[in-house]
Length: 422
Ligand SMILES: [Zn+2]
Image (tube, rainbow, N blue to C red; front, top):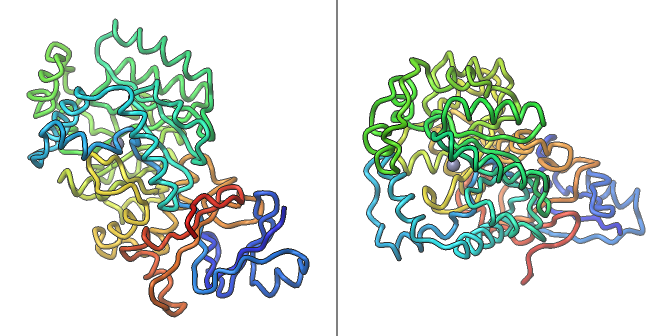
């Protein structure tokens, strides 16, 4: 089936915006992009769906999230855990306490709700972390693309062996719905050095997608360097790991990851708030992708990622919302708008839009199908209906301003409309 979609502005994501732009969807793939006049001339018999005052934009990529925690605010309220945590480790302890009150069904409902919220906010692909592996089935039948990273952590060799057997059998499925299965060694502070190195080696060998939280908080840096600080004093005893506290490595987080074999482009790093200049160079030299989660970092008060240095070094950056345990929404539009003010001019709006689209698609290995409105890619796009008119030179200001989530009036995946009520 063929159809032309047109709007006042078409933002392709890898070429200048087109005023009066249009795209030709042919059987769920983009077959042409240009002005409406040109497309109609070339395809005179094809129907046109015109969104007169709207903006056509690529689907966004949420490169780091935990959709299983979408219902966290409700759970926290039921568990009487509404007080704001005072530190990063306090926040982790609260998260664990709330998770202990949940059933498998809670997680499944939470993921379903996260998928729905993501699609409605114009997100086409996710890098989603899953600790409750049985809940992966919720992705069957979902339109979301991306990777579902099975989370793994542990310090005790006996327990790790059990986890490894379970992971092996799930990974054999390779795909659930539209998402590919991968692995997430949670972070350098929650997993033994040997197991960490083993996961990285497996992912490299088998070309399995991988993602790792890295350099998120000062507490993590203290723990990796010295085996000390609040992670050793509070977190490890809380989960009964006090006898498993490793010795300090004397390394910065990225150096430590490098020593465990974790710096390869297939390992999507997340946060990078604490990276110093030498670590940034290390990431750039290994062609790493890094997902920034500014709203989560702000809520947990762990600092601000050195975004200007990362961009200057050539590290591919993308955006993630992290979970609803440390954020107010799962919308990448909201993340983009927050990042625009949070980074205070260090990143311009077109760069932020790139991070939210093509940067994320590259990080998740999806750049062939998503990330921009380009010929040959999936006909995946969204329609934004601005409340007030603006000039062409204000287009990027509009896209990077708060309130875009509410402007998403339609979303197309493989040429099919996903939102009802138009
Ligand atoms: Zn996370």
